Length: 299
Image (cartoon, rainbow, N blue to C red; front, side, top):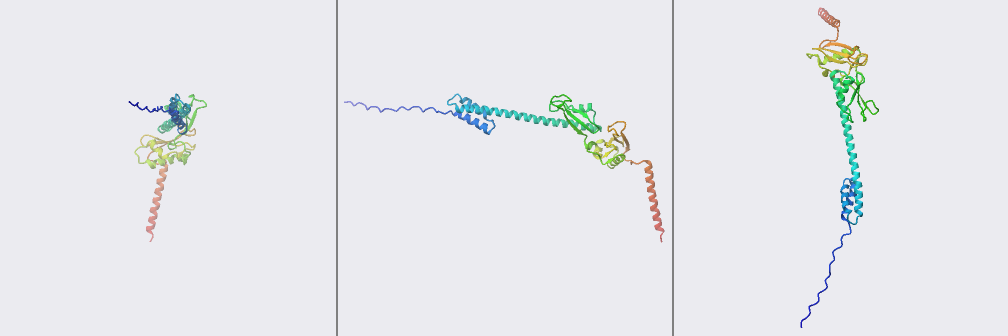
């Protein structure tokens, strides 16, 4: 008799694991957004916003929505900070450039003064400084105040001359070139001879009168006339030169200028002074000879 096969044991059917209930991408976006907002001033918030945006399409959406909002706010904050930084850097650069340009404009005037021993008139000075621009791109303007002082002017933001936003900066001619720096040590008529003596001391062995650029380092602004104007040096032909002051009106190259002419290697005294000095020396020599004779005759 054939036995029936044993019955099969019941088989347990395995169910697939349940899908995760969390939204990992949303959590990651939220964390990146928070870190970017708190620690990085919004620098990495754009990444958190992008992750959260894609996570919004999955459930649950809580962290994703929070990460998206924080990420967008952080991105806006980061963008505003960058705009402010760029504007600040641009303002600093414009300020630095303007300072450099006005310094260059001042050098233009100083170089003219160095070459001509006088400040330029308004038209010439404005032409010199006009090659340099202010912060708003307008050329600088120049105005002469007196023989030693001048102004460099910016038209300001409205680029219109003579309005309330004009920026005016005052300057004096360099002290080492005879301008600014107060009154010198010598004043009046004696200052001419003192200046001449100083020039003789330094340059008397030269074969011709030195240039202004050499003399200005020697006499500087030490010598002034009775009106307080600096005494200027002008080289002439050969060993001749002039010392000149601006006179009572303080304006160079006018009719009241005081001019003294000298020859390099000659004294400042007149011929009469030289004769008197020679006579005095001869008298002193005679007195010494007489004293020697008297001493030799004593027993």
